Image (cartoon, rainbow, N blue to C red):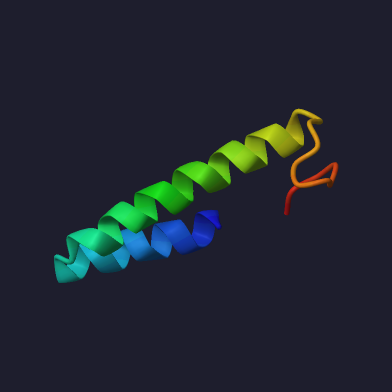
Length: 51
């Protein structure tokens, strides 16, 4: 999810499409939060690790 967010950020920046930029930011932030929760030991989506 983080990688997809970064790819959308790059595509949105290069092409100037603001909706891709916004979706990329949201996906990157959500991915980072889930990754952080998984590394801290919290169950994410019923799983102990998120990846």
